[in-house]
Amino acid sequence: MGLEKSGFDRGTARLFIGVDLSNKLNLKTNVIYTDFNRQGLNENGLGSVLFNALNTPSVFSPYDSNGNYTLVPDTPGYGNEVINPLAQINNTYNSYNQERLNGTVSLEYKPFKDFKVTTRYGFNRGNSVGKSFSMLVNYGNGKVFNNVSQSTVSQNTEKFSSYTFDVFGEYQKTIAENHNFKLFLGGTLHEENGEGLFATGFDVPYNSWEFADISLANGLPLVPIKTNGSYKSTPYKRPSLFSTLDYDYKKRYLLSFIVRRDQSSRFGPEFSVAYFKSVLGGWIISDEEFFNDNSKINFLKLRASYGTLGNDAIPGDAFRSFLTGEAEYVFNGNLNTGTAVGVLTNPSLKWESDTKVDIGLDAKMFNNSLEITADYFNNTRKDLLIRATPVSGTAGGSAPGSGNPTVNAGVVRNSGFELALNYKDNIKDFNYSLGFNITTINNKVLEVNNGSGFLESGAFGIGQPSPTRMQEGQTIGAFFGYETDGIFQNQAEVDAHPSQIALGAAAQPGDIRYKDVNGDGVINLMIELL
Image (cartoon, rainbow, N blue to C red; front, side, top):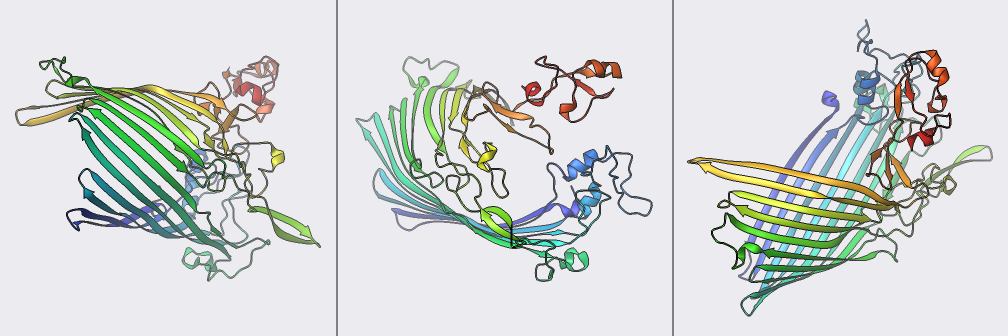
């Protein structure tokens, strides 16, 4: 969409080296360099190209009689936010470039039989530059996207890096021929950093993308605003320790235990550490002596697992308070820019956990031609980490530069079945394979930890109610809306029906009629949605 105004190109180079430094020491390296460029359009939500393409009446041609882009009028019914999408594409200018270098370096050392130590260093480093140009443009009388006062150019540069350092040892031992043990011990440290600069220039020469650069835009903003800024993110650190013990008897009875200790800098000192444990078991039934060797079943395995994993994917400073909000005030008759509290903090944030139960069956039949995998799963995610959870307006989350906090908002369960069938065979020299899979899933919100009992999301336009919710007893993201009851055929039906003025406008013949769900004689936003 947008031809040359929306594009992406990428170049990649890769280097891999593997070498045995000795009969006990092995070195492996894998390095990737990536360079890409991107131009983009506004493609989502109110004011996007798609929004304008859908809402511009088809009675208008793209161009007027002079060959210029047709201006969509601001008369009632058209909307002051709807503009010609082709004009929007033509007047969109931006660019973005990123260079990235990432890879791994690992050493594997085997000091003696049955024991080896591995160290691995993974890295990801990159930098980017971006630019966008807002030209002087008029899309028609009253349009909110007009820019008739001052052209601007905004530029930014960012640098980011991360690394992961792993050290782990593996020891294997067989006792009394049939008892096999494998012990795995290790630790890992992950860290991420980032910083950036951004600035805006005013009065771009000749109102042209060709001259859109801060060094050439020497104008001053028409209103006093901050024209530059920077950031340096708080380092994200996640050290972990883990251990795995695998045991099998005659390769037939399988058992594994996993324990890990994770710590995250995204939580406060009291909640940064969490422990997660798992146990897995398996039974290869087809290896039993009682199993019929002449059976059409070549392999049969029963397995089960129970365990818990953690999630800390939230903003790095969600539990800390920063003075990053906006604060403008009048002092001595002048408008001054100050500082206020930023996004609301939540010092009680803790790890989100995902407890998984899985019972499965693996089978191979008809000389291994047919493979069957069947699973029942039940996953329960507790202490869900939800960003921007609405709280009381008196807390200040709606203030400029602020925002609602991240909270552990509830519990969600996913359960269901998975079945996969794969068949392969040949007819003389012709080989073929067929596959089939099906999954059922039952999603249910078990708990929502806020005052209203639900969380809304998915609002598209200004002033419109959110169409989806996370609400106890429902699926996550369930749609909520008004229940319709046909179309008003005449004014008499409008007069006989409860007023719909609360929905934004008085009803007229030809409008959709909505049900009065609770029978109170009023079509009310909150009641009817429930």
